[in-house]
Length: 531
Ligand SMILES: Nc1ncnc2c1ncn2[C@@H]1O[C@H](COP(=O)(O)OP(=O)(O)OP(=O)(O)O)[C@@H](O)[C@H]1O
Image (cartoon, rainbow, N blue to C red; front, side, top):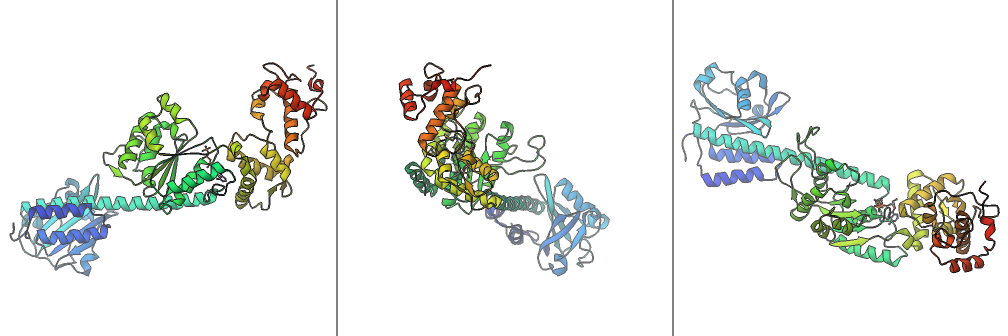
């Protein structure tokens, strides 16, 4: 089609070009420039101007054509004074102005800027997408004619596509800004919390840990999901951070979501984000952790706590790398490497129908089990030095060390809270100690077997001559103290269900021979007066 108003239109090609324009990942500026190039081909004009709405004014942001001069490019006008432009935005319809309109309308928007003849060809196209209007596109020709309706309809479609493209470019810019902010924030927190080093992994004295670190390094290079299991406080999160740092995604965000810490009803939105109005209180669009982790790694901590319903959506996000934010039907794509951590037995959760088997297989392609501290006691000296150093960076209390006697005491404990409990014990000891040496008296941890003792109602005061608090220099001494403590609890009873042997998990004859060896002979010393 070619007439006095339209250019050489090649329907299919123009439509394809328009579609490409609308989906191209350009900045808004590039998009406007390329859009106006396209327009030159399909409609005749002497001036095409894109105005964007800013605080009630239409501000020219791009202009094209023989009349586009510096004045036009700096032009702006108050929307309130141009009812015909307001109407175009309100009705969201493009409008060609007739001579009649010019005679009775609200005046020429370019008055004082251009000298266009009265009754010249003029068209206004609203730039609206979703629930927002971004501005208008105006086309002007010095000729005194009216743009025919088919041309107006074509340019109206262009206006809609341009607005959609402006919208997505704007959303991309917002998303990237949030993404950068979140990245910076995460880095800052990570540095503050000291999690930016892998700690004792590859340098561990425990062969199990060294093997685990080697496998973690290998899998880090891939995008394979990793399931990190281990008791509470064994270092699952720190290992996950190390995997991220060792991966090609190291410069991208590392985002965590603790599935146990967020109320079940909010988890979907936390993971996948939501759009404005998705639920009461959703006053604006909000990106979820998946979007925030785009390009990087997402750690799903305590993944066993994820509600069953949500597990299907997570599975799809893992398989297809796409999902819909809550309240939206638009599919979002995010390139995220997933790490999951749990201290619960997921196989058991599957048997109890609390965890989806298909999700489990997807997450556990590469399982890594962190051993509890009691299975890597050989690391205690190095761990203490490392944790004290990290603590010093936070508190400024430098030069603290655990004495060999202090270490004996720490080695004798079971550490049910693992590395976190050790870190806390060291911090407490540092606060309570005046100098820089942390000896056995600095630690208030019970010795081995305390878990059994703790299960008993209340520990009576030790009998005269019974075990005393103080330095424990050897393993034998630690054993002696602990056996005496249990004997105090059982009032000297060795045999029977509540006897010391049963509590210690030993045969009575074994306990008796050990008592003899350790010089614990007189049982009556443990009998406490009940009165
Ligand atoms: N490899 C390591 N070397 C030194 N310290 C470590 C190491 N791993 C963990 N820690 C320390 O142990 C504590 C617990 O670590 P982390 O939070 O990673 O454990 P977790 O297993 O994720 O805990 P939870 O099960 O409670 O989520 C932190 O103080 C951390 O700094």
